[in-house]
Image 1 (cartoon, rainbow, N blue to C red):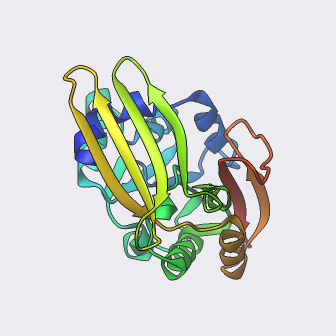
Image 2 (cartoon, rainbow, N blue to C red; image 1 turned 120 degrees about the vertical axis):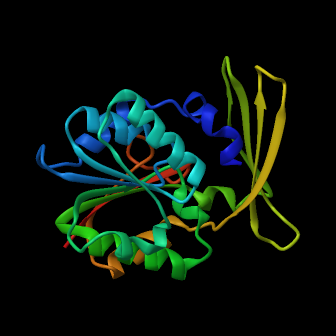
Length: 240
């Protein structure tokens, strides 16, 4: 999927100012170190690096990381990118390395089960400094599992049409079907991936068990407070 859409990714999901401000507001000082887990094409990391912040982006998709590195090089930006697995944070980084870690865009739903999510959260805890901040964004699956199917808003611009639908397959697993139409060529690509429907309360329970506290929940990057019927939830919390 990402090999196909990597060069269109920034057209599908353009970086918005509210995301930049949101992560900056998570930091205590200009010298804070930031890790973006599931950074995709690295636009947020590149922008923060241009502003003078120490940043690292990590993504498991080699095509995305390759694109990010090339773009940073073209712009003359010193941004660090790692092609790696979010479950191996302790192998890539020393303890107490970062002040802020973010994992947005429903990335954690790509993990297989609660045990993997627990391992990931534990890794985040280890690489954060004391009182470091972790910010997670995930689909509000409590809303989705009540239905047989659910569609996220269609993205339709000058470059692509991007459709996203959830449904339970014959094995009762949550299938995420995406379809992208490239307007320039007329090509249509469809992809299916399995997402693990981590529920908000399950996620909060794991975060508490791993030592995080001071939870703040939002539904978007404009600081709208989360309500149970919202489509996504952003959890900000801190290492004890």
